[in-house]
Image: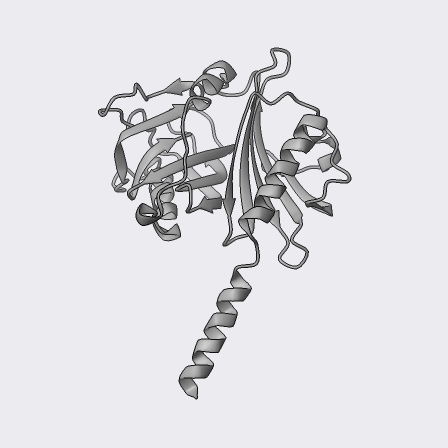
Amino acid sequence: MRNFVTIVIGALAAHTASTCTREQLTAATADLLTVQTTGKINGTASFASPIKYTENRKTVDIAKGIHSKALTIAHNRSQHDLSQCAAFSEFIVTTAASPYVIATQLRLDNATQKVNQIDTIMTTKGDWLFNVTGTYYWASREKWDPIPMATRDTRETLKAAADAYCDIFNDKSVKVPWGQPCARLEGGSYTGKGQASDRCDVGIPTGVKLINRQYVIDEEYGTVDVQMDFGGTGGFGVGGLPDSHEFRVENSKLSKVE
């Protein structure tokens, strides 16, 4: 009897933890794309009301934020985190007058299955290292296909790889699981040349803390998006910047960094 009870309780706990489906999360990111292309937030099926919203790490009225602007999206990609009922979307807008690179995390309420939290980090003309031309060119050419089931890494492995990359900015003793080839897209600059020798472990700054991290992890695609504060000055002379990095992990090694 004791074993039976343990099994039942374990099954119920597992069922409770898995409250979202990939279809629900995919619908939410599809609705986010519609919102961004129309500038109309109200009436979106996947969105709750009200929604807790931050933009560049500050609380903002979503009706006055970037998602209230109708934008022409040149490139988009989304990832979905079933364990956290969360999702991530990247939008690149190449319109000359108002270009943007937008990274958004969505979180769904467990009870209603509707988006009740949106956190967006965006950059535009005049922002540090902003280069939408280079970002679009390289991002639109990358392939982020599903990882074969037999070689998928665990959530713990994916998160550890992303954290190691973030940690090495402040601690050079950290061992990062660098893959090779590995391509890194940073402000429009790209380390990938389509060669087996491509590397991501170049141009890493020192003395920079990447803190207050918030994750979206998608095991099916081997991806982790991390929103955080780029704190500390290092050699850049900047600090406290809102930051979003997305990672692709294959065979437990970093293969792409954006």
